[in-house]
Length: 282
Image 1 (cartoon, helix red, strand yellow):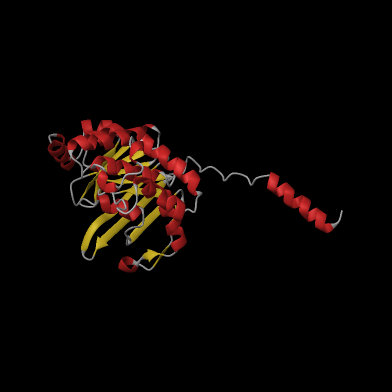
Image 2 (cartoon, rainbow, N blue to C red):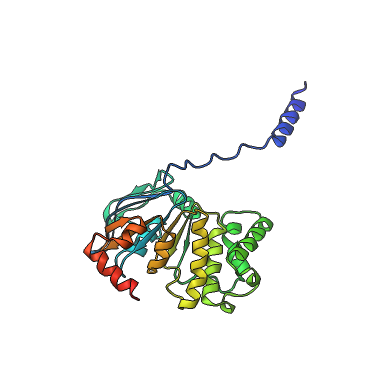
């Protein structure tokens, strides 16, 4: 066979035999693991040696009073904040650092980008782009960051907006939606990245009680699908309903942790008993 014809044959064979699918993640490896994490703002120690594990398909709730370090821990996990000591692993891969103490920063920016695209964060204040429609908000990152096909992304975005109950709001502007609807759009936007885990930072605290229930229902539905989530919340009923494991932070340390049935019914720490007495009475 002529070498040129041989090359053409090999090319056609490659075209008709798609590349093998990427290996599925090992379900025994936690999606997120934090080991002995420390975070300070100058002399103020905010996180003091916290370790936790988020297994695949589990919901881990972080509870505690304001200033206990919950949101900071979440931001450190997504590398929106730099920590000064400890390890952060995503699916078994440890974040690489350079420098020490207050000078410590991630050493590999490509690794940081990869982690952030796999850990979608939902913020307290929605953070929707006001100059884009709801549909455009949901599509923006998958199309422009992940370079996915716009038609496929649009179909998925509309599917997710319907899933969170606002499919009819796709062409509206954020300002035309209620707070609860905007937060549901933010959750759809996070899901459209097809993340390995969701990080939710007080997703209901900026909402009126009636609107909170709209978002709570969506979070419960996601938990029922066994999505991996780290959830910071002041809503103890939500934490009790959706969590596989609850972590109570006090002054930057884990004061107590365990399954919600045990933690909420028989807390061992006096500080947790005081916290639950105050928050459950609200």
